[in-house]
Image 1 (tube, one colour):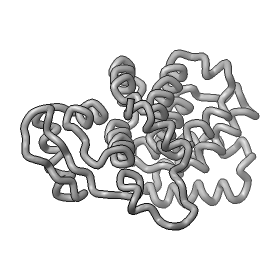
Image 2: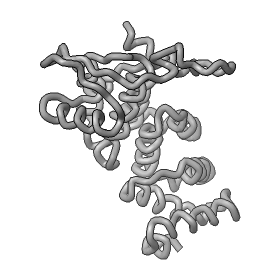
Image 3: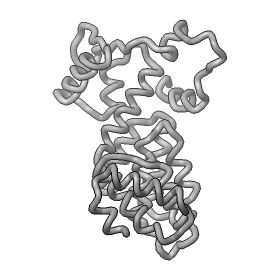
Image 4: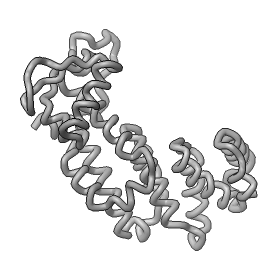
Length: 232
């Protein structure tokens, strides 16, 4: 059945996997189909946490069939879903002996850097392990989007140098990125040149507390823990 699934368009494959999960998610016979689906998620830049968690659970029952390459891809995709807690959910299902392998220790370190807002350390560590993260298309863009999300919770005006470090872009590439954000996300560039230039981020309830709803909503604790190191 795995080969049949591979031949199907991505949408049909997703529907077929959904059906497999609904009928019997604990059937080890669906393991090859779920592995194929992980590779499909990588190549098509799609994502299914439910399918990937199901595969990790099946690996717990069939440890001799575990593919560390597939597990690594699942973790990278989960990391790309930050600030959702997907990485921790997946890691919980991975045996400690597997987590001790170098590639998984690296991914755990990368996750820690993201969760604590240490973007410079994150990009430095990612650069040393390109073979892990570059195997999954869209990784860099997903993390850049998360970095922008964190900055938008933190700053009303962000220095160009802080943005450059957070998203790991400099020079002309950064100029193009800023042009896109100005055109599509309402960013404003204040007059000035070089690293001292300030970028005005549209107001939201986090960087402009006066916009906060009068309901009992509050900033989630995980946001505070991620933002705090940047403020330092």
